[in-house]
Length: 225
Image 1 (cartoon, one colour):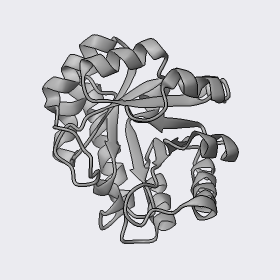
Image 2 (cartoon, rainbow, N blue to C red; image 1 turned 90 degrees about the vertical axis):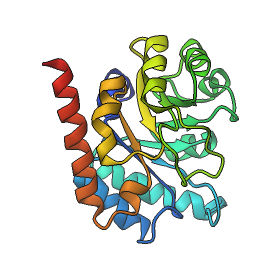
Image 3 (cartoon, rainbow, N blue to C red; image 1 turned 60 degrees about the vertical axis):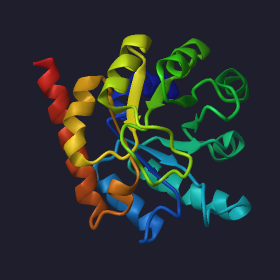
């Protein structure tokens, strides 16, 4: 399955939902199921920040979320925690610039693992490409309150510059993204959008996910015409 996933990463990145148990006012499993029904194409378990679960509690919710993703054939990615990702049989792991280097991570992981990395500028993106990242998450595109340590927004110009640097490497945009931003983001060169609060805190996660997917596909369709 892994090789098939890696061959279609650009499609999987179209609507990349990221959530931990502390990102939603509603039960996280219910939110995730609604988002899956709505059509998210990839999910990342990001359990960080105030109130985040630890140890066995973290593992158990990860297993439940992974089972939901498996039910909908959506790959399950773990943020930062390589050992947890391996232990529960996740599809891959996503790491930041301050986490363990990709080259070291790939040595620990099964061959089929998806390894994604965050990049805020062209130099970081170029290094990720050189180190063998399967995809990069670029941003923040706009200001965001979800991450306490968020960097300065790079905007659409930042996406375009990074796309020029990494060629065809799969790339998803993240950071403060709302529906009205999607068209510009895709046309600037991203393969998709990574969403946290615009789905996790939406009144209806299913409808929010479906709306993002339709907008990404419409924007991509405009490019290919």
